[in-house]
Structure formats: C-alpha cells, structure tokens
Amino acid sequence: MTKDVALSTALRAPVQGRSKASYERMLAAAEALMAAAGSDEFTLQEVSKKGKVSIGSIYNRFESKDALLHAVQLRVLERVDKQMGAMLDEARNGASTLDQLVVALTRAVGETLKENADIMRPLMLRATNDPLVAATGKASFVTTANAVKGALLLHSAEMKQPDPLRAVDSAFRILYATIARYLGFGSATTAAWEGDWDVLMQDLSRMIAAFLVTPPGF
Image (cartoon, rainbow, N blue to C red; front, side, top):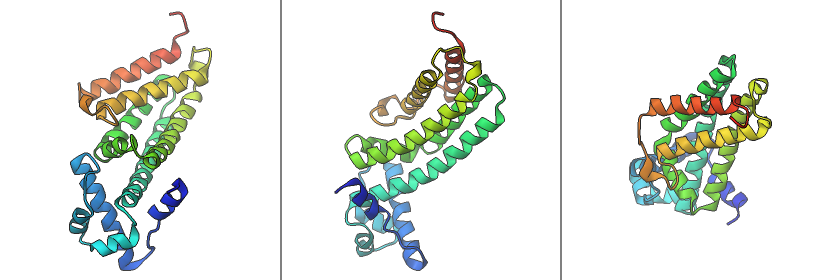
C-alpha cells in the first residue's frame, strides 16, 4: 500500500451522527490501549470491547489494524501539533532576549512531549519498522523544528556563531534528542525518566543558550 492510499484509508471518517461518534470511540479506544500498554500490541477485539463498537463496524471503517493505527497517529499528531504550536507561539511572543527565548522554547517542547509521552512512545517505537508511521512522524517533527529554529533566528543578532542556521539546527537536534531520550522515545526506552526533569530543562536551556552566544574557539 502506498503512503497516499494508506492515508486515504486512515482518513475515511464519517462526518456526522452516530457513525461519527462510533468512529471516534474506535480511535479513542485504540489510543487508550496503546498508551496503557506502551506498545501497539492491542487487538481489534480489545478495541471493540473498550470502544463499545462491533468488530464489523471497525472493519467497515478500517481494512486492517494497521489502518486503524495510522488513523490514531494522525489524530494524535493533529492534537500534539496544535498544542505544540500554541506553546511555541507563546514562548516566542513572551521573550525579549535570546536567553529568555531559549528557556521558554525548551520548556514548551519539553512539556508538550512529556504531556503526550504515553501515546508518543508507542508510536515512535512503531515508527522503527513502519515506514508510514515514520514518515508521518517526521512531518510533525519538521513542523516543530522549523517553528523552533525560526523563533531562534529572530534573535540571530545576539548569536556569536558564524553560521546561525547551522547553530540553531544543531541546537534543536540536541534539544529534541535529549528530551526524547529522557521520555524513552524510539529505541531509548531503557533510559526513560533518568534524573530530575526540572534540572534537565534548566541545564539544557543553559547549555543551548551558552552555545549560541559563545564564539568558536572558546
């Protein structure tokens, strides 16, 4: 199945009435099962029971468990991207200096991912062997990356790095990778919840800010 076909299947949602309510219960049930288990090891029978929908209704909307999972991912990322965007906008608009902005952006990315970690974790684990989940997740990642880097570049005059574009790209990758490891995303499940979260946020902010305002050679 191609990416476009799979997405079309995942998005084949009713628009009104009882069918829409049933569809939403399917997605909510599958999401809850994944978050509770920390993996995609749920069955359609479990979705049927938890969502109070028949197996026939599920197959009427989704040709397979994979299609249901892809729809769940789209639903989750739509919610997470909206929340992330609002948090990043607030961080950007509330900071008057680069140092303040780095602290605010770090907290915005960190808290958004932490709040959604229970469902993001199994989705990122699934992405290691599901190209569609990986591609959809990457698109969400790029959206966040562009928003963070764009906000930082508004303060490029305060940076001492010779290549601000390269600097903010490195800063974001370090920021995201560190948070992802702490939360146990992807293959880093055994490293989850090591250390104090607030200390991590503070130190990560300081390190990134220091990197951006320190010229090479120091």
